[in-house]
Image 1 (tube, rainbow, N blue to C red):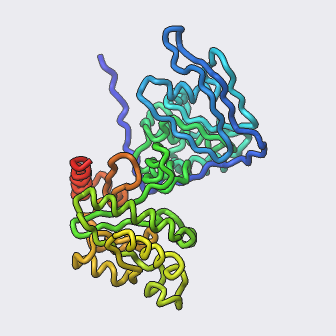
Image 2 (image 1 turned 90 degrees about the vertical axis):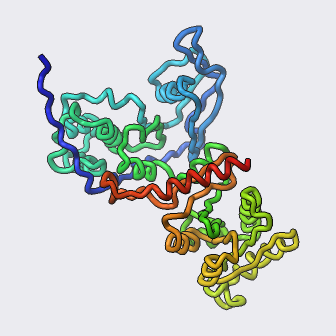
Length: 390
């Protein structure tokens, strides 16, 4: 006879995960972790790691990639001491580690409540502080009294995050941290973990690409950004002749690959009225115009700088194939206003094809059967277009 199962209520997601890790200053001048000639295997015939040496320094961000079963999770367990090496050495220097392992949620006590589980890791924190952490990982009010045993995988992952948030750490080791997180939590989690320039920068980092570039493409024209996920103050500092030339060359090369035999390129001005001959700023005179003139001499069909309030109007009239925007909003606002359902996010400057929709994750309409697949289809078709010409 099967016992009657308890009916679990679906949690309502009225807000997103919102937190930051408590950083403990790393004061040593030594490498944070030093790995030298380590060897590990579960048996003599199954050596996963052999003669591995590396160092991690303050500020380093490392992504471990590889096929399943090749020792990625095992390496992380070795770094935190959950597995023992056969030979070699691993030296940790003044580390306070926050470790999120793939299987750590299975170590939670199913008989305890969320509050009780966090209390075990509280390190002398009072009830108010613990409940504050609970709230940061989206457990408020009476929900902290839920038993661990009735939680979903995503909810258990948030409990594990809470346990890390109770600590002051200077070294994070995260093994597929968003694997069990629901879509509401994953984005906020990655923002807290990482200061990559959005997922474009993350993809670039996996392939040792220092500077991937974001292009918005549609059937009328494309817009490539010199800078993207930077503050406006920082973006202005990055507008240099050399960078502009690099970006335009990348865009020109892509246009040729998609069979634009002589792509017509237009460059936005940075300042109002494209600087008005230096009245509203010097970036056009000192950086943008020299870059455009240099590329003209190399044979590119290019004009600019042109005031952004003019350039996109002309692009809509099909006078340009590629518009060069200097910063995120300069390119994104007009493109999304004009072609929100058509545009495709294309990553250039990376050794693989990568396209995506040009909008965010739309949490407000998630699970409501309101989302449109039009952008996704356009992204797939553009990727196919790129694959056919490689």
